[in-house]
Image (tube, rainbow over all chains, first blue to last red; front, top):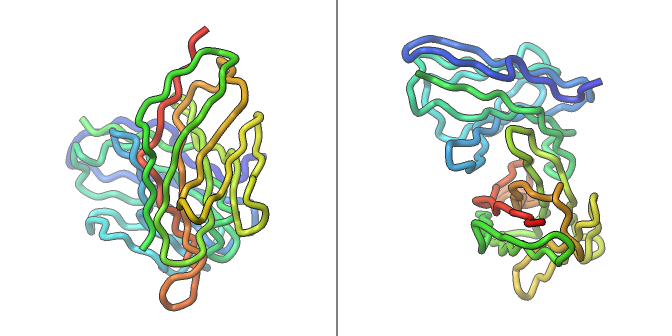
Length: 113
Length: 119
């Protein structure tokens, strides 16, 4: 069983479209995260939610809106996609804000054309 | 504030020779430190972590790292490289607590080191 699963794994879409990436964890963790890996492989945190509440928001454009319907899910919705949004997006989860036990998903490769 | 610097963007070794990937960190508080590996077009895999216990940490696939507070370093080593070790490696730091005393689980990644292993 996959602990942290993301869908889709690959997504190619046109500029201006709106798309979502879904994430689910079956570990019973309280905290979920979205990280972005850009074209230079640099990884940076975008958001963190704990029990459906936003606890980290790292100056991400308003076009990115995370949604957590319950603590096992953290979806990432992106409006008006731009070329620069092309990246790999990693979902992760951990027990309450514990960096020592973070589990990452396999990543979602987003290409905006 | 926390940051991490990986001193080499590329490291190339021959199969069977030692591997050394260098990492220096900066942290306001007692940090937790990690090494992650990413194979091409794959996700992130945790190799090992330091969380204030033993300073020499052993991980998977024969890798180990030593936490040296005086040098603010957390270098990754392996005695003998294998072809399957070719990948990108990320040194990662997490402050245990922020200024308010709460850890938010935020990881700060280094820029990555690409390890190439030659036959």
